[in-house]
Structure formats: C-alpha cells, structure tokens
Length: 230
Image (cartoon, rainbow, N blue to C red; front, side, top):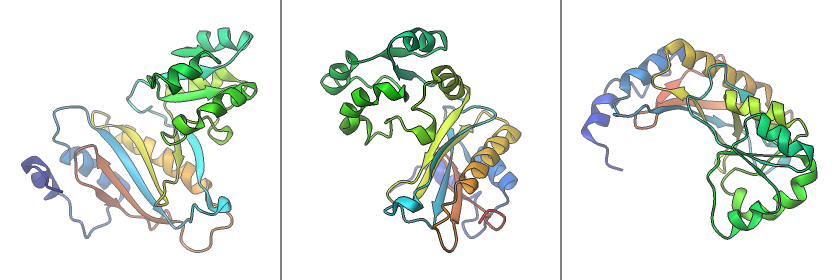
C-alpha cells in the first residue's frame, strides 16, 4: 500500500520499535494527524483469545466519559407504549415489522446502532443476514436488547461503544476525535481498556492483551506499552 507524502512525514515521528506509555502515545497520535478533517482516534487491541471458542469470546459495551465526537443515529424496534418511550428518549427511528422490507429490499441503513425490546427479537431476527455482517444486530451483552429503551438510547447518545473480537481476534474501537484534548482521549482510552480487561475470559490461558496500537484515521499506528495491561 502506497502512502502519501504527509503520511510518510508523520510516520517519521513514530519509532516503530518503541512501545510508548499511553499518555505519550496519545500525544504522538495527535501530533501525527495531518488530514484536513477531524480524524477519528482508534484503538486496536490484539488479544490472545481464540474467538472460535464460545468461552473465549470477548464482547461488551462501555460508555466513554467524553463521548466519541460522533452523532450516533439510533433505530429502535419496539411496539406498544415502548414506541412513545423510545421517541421521547431521542431515538432517530422507531418501528416494527414495517421496517423489515425497507431494510431487506431497499437497503435502508441510515442508522449506526439498533436497539430492540426482547419481544421484538423474533422480528429483528429476520434481518440477521443484513445486520449481522455489519455488526448491527442487537445483543443483550451490549445492552441493546432491553426493555429499558430510555437508558439504552441515552447511553448510546452519550458515547456508549460496543467492543468485540473480529475474525483475527482483534478489538477495534473509536476513543474520540483528533480535536479532543489529550486528557479527553486519555480518559476514554482508560475507560475502554478497563472494560476490556474486566471482560477477560476465564477460560483463557496465557497472555490476554498481546498488543495495543493507537492511530488516527489517516495517521500512522503508535504502539502502546502493554506491560501494565496484560
């Protein structure tokens, strides 16, 4: 993959052989971000888990203290009085069966998170092939299958993010924007790492956190010291 001149200049700031302390890594990521837009800062956590085994799955959610810097569009599947409750809590879209053809046939995906009440999961299950691969399927572990739709929506709007293993057993999560202060990014990073560490599967033997890398959308990756994390 060819990188542009700006990226190459930014990459010179980072010593790839060094694992930086989290505060230094955050400062470097901010310094190395050169794009003309407000880049997202992401954390990539390589784990020692084997996600093919159910007992080694890592999945959950955490509310970042300073939010993600992104406006999140929430779709809620509900019926009865839960429809009004979801609308009052600030859901962007609320519906039921009538949304199935819109998503399945028309490819409507103008939302970032899907919340469903448990009694609607039979309906939502029919969208598994569409929502599943995009990581949009509601899940009780992530707090997106719940009767308390007000809390779910408020948490998501406040900066709740979901973390889960990908096929390579890596967790990818946003922790804010380049425009955030170093302190804001650091607080979000610590909140995410704290949640991921607590989620260590009891069945896992050996090292849990293998490596942690911080990077902005267009910037070079900065390795974070895992000595205190693993």
